[in-house]
Image (spheres, helix red, strand yellow):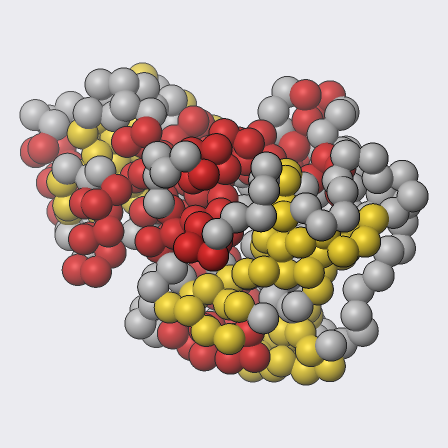
Length: 338
């Protein structure tokens, strides 16, 4: 079969690879219904994260179970399933605490930008839907695999509660779905930092009440103006740079909380600098598996439509164009169909 491989900066190829098969008793093999390009894929694509050898790509996926290992008991052949970017047994101490992305048996998922995918720890990683979903639900169900689960975790980590004022730093798919998540959790006011008109429109549809286009000191000042000089209760940091982290910290009121889910690149925080802010910081790789059942249910019951973040759909063999479009900000998120 052919699958996506990154050779180096801006060098994405769709080339022949060995078809996945069961390697361990707890594996499953699924036929991909839909996958996509993630914003975090752009770090190595842009050369900001080293790629030392040809690297298979993709970690967001949903599809039909075609084969299961001998130790798989919960996942069944023919089921439509969704998994996350981190596999987990869902039984150990970290999993029981709700942090499946720190499972002691975790494996990072790769190779999902392909027609077929092997999923380790299948019983703990994959969540089936009650039936095979209709095609119009596929984008939203795919979003639960990562970007919605990550945005949801950002809101949980930032302690978003009914009536609170929230700011979202980052207007990519995760940030936009962080807006949706905060709205679902009852936030009264949601401020989005964005300079992109199309993204601003989706943010408004998802529940944003205010748009701030300024950055740095001006951006912080604008947020303070909107909150009578106090700052917001919660910030969802969805970028991962030094600038975005400082923006998040400086926009938060003393005693407020930041949920940071942007993969850090060059972000360094000084202890003394943090000490006097009285700001709570919590984040990391989102434990998407914790939230998958609830998020899938919200999609299937028509409560949310996170699939709106996919504004470009391509055949899988045109995956390189998906990377280019997102890199050039011609697309928020590219959905790929085998």
